[in-house]
Amino acid sequence: MTTRKLLLLPGDGIGPEAMAEVRKIIAAMNEQLGAGFEVEEGLVGGSAYDAHGKAISDADMAKAQAADAVLFGAVGGPKWDSVPYDVRPEAGLLLLRKEMELFANLRPAICYPALAETSSLKRDVIEGLDILILRELTGGVYFGEPKEIIDLGNGQKRAIDTQVYDTFEIERIAGVAFELARTRRNHVTSMEKRNVMKSGVLWNEVVTATHKAKYSDVTLDHMLADAGGMQLVRQPKQFDVIVTDNLFGDMLSDVAAMLTGSLGMLPSASLGAPDPKTGSRKALYEPVHGSAPDIAGKGIANPIAMIASFAMCLRYSFNMVAEADRLEKAIAAVLDDGLRTGDLMSEGKTEVGTVAMGDAIVEKFRALSA
Ligand code: NAD
Image (cartoon, rainbow, N blue to C red):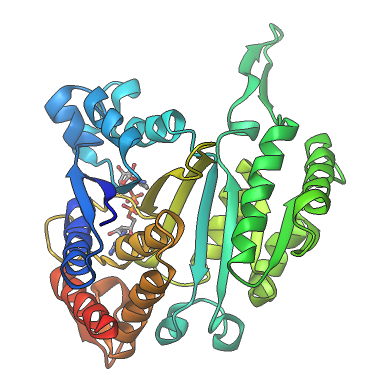
């Protein structure tokens, strides 16, 4: 039987509450489908700081490196606001991304029909939306050197950030975009600012060359990133996969995500390069939301972002496409039945807590898998 090694890092605040619902789905898949998930658990963020004095211990980092995939909850909270900067809860996540070399960040924006009314856009613009923003995560202006504030000595200071990309960084993220598009609607839109930035000129050149060399079966469009932002709110369904750099991706993925309503609905994945021997990629899956200290411990957090992150894990780390589809269908079905956590609540719907929402999704998933 295939063994699939998962490391769960629930973290702080609502992280453990949401992760508990994923654990139920993993158990159901092992029991009903013989999925063979082997689950280990570790500490990250404030909980790791309390136990080990750092945001992730070396032992848990080693477990993350050895796992087939890592599921991450959320970190942070007021309790750790004054801990030293390099061991603050968020440092655990940044260290995981860095040590596992997770350069590709995937953020789907999916609008479940039952939730079209919670979007700030009109129903017909948003209903049925299913797009994927792919953001380069380890390069660009957030990491480029020099990065400094210089005192000019005349009462003025100068701040410098450096936008820098090498060919291989653009090639590898473009490759991920084309491969993902092949599993979807076969269409990539690359966004940069080649009209004013040299990094945009190179980005455009390298994406075009990568397409020509290996992926000419996929449709490729280029769009300036500012126009892309406008098109995302005007006519988002024109897109399938959008690939862009770290800075533009940070902004465009937030815009796209918010098209679909609540923070409690949004999953994400961060992927590394394929292992040359096995072809498998290092990967970490996490909800977009944080640890929500304002509602932690109350049993009312929406577990769907965490569960949908596990669906991405099934799809991208284990190629369990049918199971991922079924899990996403189970989420949609529960919403169609009118069940809502507080963050999604509207008139005429039934308000449920974290555990009841998780149970309902597991039950639908089991029924769809029978
Ligand atoms: P947040 O995402 O935790 O919460 C923002 C708002 O959305 C809150 O009102 C919260 O109650 C609500 N919310 C978030 N997730 C929800 C869910 N699943 N169900 C229902 N409501 C939900 O962001 P914040 O308040 O800015 O940050 C709180 C803490 O989380 C901070 O310490 C921050 O640093 C940390 N944070 C961590 C991550 C991460 O772990 N990846 C991401 C963002 C923020």
